[in-house]
Length: 334
Ligand SMILES: [Zn+2]
Image 1: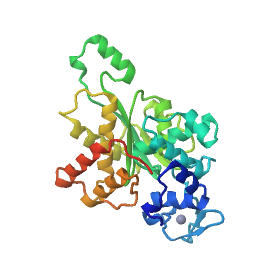
Image 2: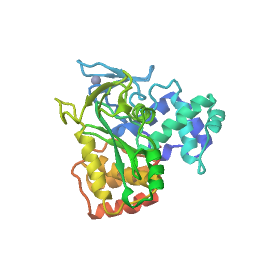
Image 3: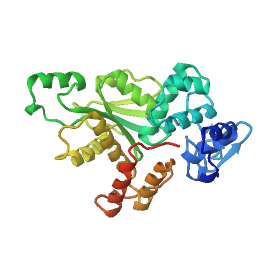
Image 4: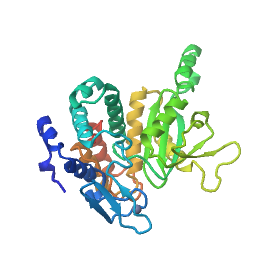
């Protein structure tokens, strides 16, 4: 496994470093998996054989035997673009202080502007959620509305707000949670089909089982996913189908917001949601693990391998984490 010192420090070094395919694979593997040790996406086996010529792993579990690349289950999946180009695009994006356009990416890495737009979009998704990996397995998706009391508002303003969020002065948030796993949540302008299904496509691995309520925005889900719907006017749980995990996240989020959060811009709400998401995702962790995770995201490396335990709040480490997270308002992926 490569050490931090071996990593490139300038764009020129990065181009040279990532020009080697195996280096790219090793680099992404070291970011995704604990000690860079590949995990089978199908059965979670960690004992796998790397086939260097094809740059894929073969699962050693006799009942599985799946072959998989480092791209499977990440933002790089379903893209024909090589990791060399992805990593240089990431280098450019995370180091562009004033942002970067898809035209600049297009010229710099030699892909069409449309492709560059897609690359830029996917990298932003990873930066916001702090992970290259998509959610998989059983994923519950839901939207909720936060903040603002319409009662104190002028009727005209209330109408305006209702037109933008569809729900008086409240901001809409879309959330996705992998059962027994991570949550991802985003403030959205409209809870419409395009927005909801777009977020699912960006954040959830194809083949996953997606559970939602009967909100119309989910009706046109592609058959890339197994879609299970629970109609809350009839029942809350049907066999394994329910949205209790995401509802649980909403109540944690709302409980912490209550009283302090009346009316803040959607941008600030997004930061708040990200902070709660980070805490939820580290809920099983020890203070040290959360501390390391935030340190790693400051230095440009985020752990996805930490095994986390217990949901703690209000202790010393929590305060430390707050101080650090303020300096680190935008988590960086690499
Ligand atoms: Zn396997």
